[in-house]
Length: 225
Image (cartoon, rainbow, N blue to C red; front, side):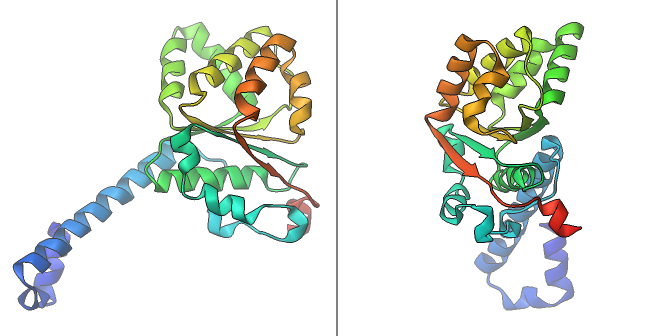
């Protein structure tokens, strides 16, 4: 507000405004500044893999991306409803970029986001269990409005990791949104999780209320090169 007021004084525009118009400009400037700072804070806390935006997504027909679905996701209703987005496709086809773009967009809408490589998340959980901060870490995840798990399925889960993933998904089911990106088609996730009963429980909570993005085509890294 102070900076805007100074600008109005320096440009002499303050003399052209009514009291109501001046107050409106000052309050608008203050609100924009707070929104921008919140956006920056949410982005920094999320630790995205890529700096990406929905506007940058390539909708080339060969990629098989449903543009109407992306447009509908941009209103962030899936976060309010606690729904999941499952992004699958071959290496380099843009899964992580789209997940990051959706995450950045959520931050712009004031939503808290956490972005993890799945293997690194499991390692962090293991370390948190060793240093006694596991409950605090799980509580933080359970309060994050959008959780993004990238590179899911690169390694199989051991017994403890199966239970940890189950707890994370259970805490979020129907309340908070989750995005999972994987090279493997969803029908193969059962084998990655391992234990049949736990896999059934996890997938039952993810699949039925999820939005699907199944990317196709050659690797974008290859095309860029």
